Image (cartoon, rainbow, N blue to C red; front, side, top):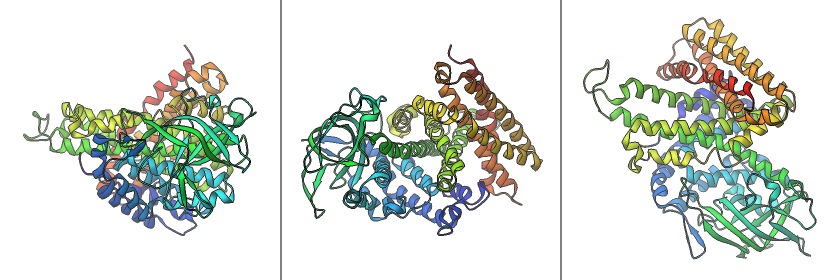
Length: 570
């Protein structure tokens, strides 16, 4: 597996130029600037390359294991987690209201990509902890904040979300885990939870499980669920760790990918739990964590895609195989027209994902004081998660293709990226769950008003490209403009369908349409920023080529997707 190279220059470009301002300074009120953020990204990249990336391949080969009821991580993982904590990376993105450093979400997007690119299985621990922090910060009592939230923010303990059960996957209303009140104000939790990411491990002395359960007499369905903290180890009044809670790790799943991430089956047998927020308000509390994770899935898709691209590009640059049309003897396969096409496709997709993740982070940074921006941010959550995760499958598959037969064997590590990426469109809500949310809650609910505002902003970029007058800008303006027209027609079709089977049947194509269009918009914004330079550098030249390629090879798919959306259910 090739060495990992963090994309520091791209983040410098995104933070300083692409969106027309220093978005980091704007988000932080000037407390930190884009220059500071670039230093943070560079530091994270150095840590990831030196500490996390070397564990990625061995972790996949060895995997987490369950022995005598205890989960053990591959060698080096526990030490790497402690190094992450000691370096301050856990508290860095935690909100200030929870006691963290409160880095802007746009910077968090960069950190999320870097952790996932260097070691996706490891990064899931960090991501689940971040989600638990957001959930407890939003709803926990002062006592729970003091006992559990502070330990999560410091990184001393890790967090999980416990939703899924053998008979309750997507349908959370079918959850049957019970929480019976006790006289001392705690709850006795009993039931089984499956697919619990990092549900047990030996990297931290305690794990804070956030558990959805049903109290006696609660309403049926999702409205009867409540949220509880159930620690792996009980905590005394003075904060000291006591005996093990009645939570047993029954098994760990043997998965297609992310082998080093322990995905656990947990059995609760009268375990002690503490209510978080309001009784029967559990789903609202858990959705805070789920939305955090869904955005994180976009970062995860970007990271694993970039790692696959970097490996494929390095291999192609050094591999000699057959004469290369139009090139001198001895040219590497990177010069073959089709290999060059694949690599350019991968590179252009990665930049689109990366830029969109930063843009969505910036939306959330600005959303607190602007309801319109908040609606736009919420619109993009399912798009970022669904579109980026689906495209990660194409990018990692293309990476295998570049290696040829060597990509199909495990030796190169290319297969691992594809296997790891396959879970991203599934967990935290499948692509269909994201697309139903997009259409039902984000498009139909306001009759397309927020999408119309998005289209108006893309229109502004088309006009800016047209005004530039350059050949590339003209081509991109034409393709983006026509893609925007197709997206408007598709949206009109969705609005005409209204709620029902027709809209649901084409919700995934509609999500992919908007994601593909948004990726083209990100490239267009980059072109506008670059053409404002008096003398673009080598990195800018590569970005211009990527933008031209994306428009010709990816953005054009919007037209076919619009035809599919208009057809409804067949």
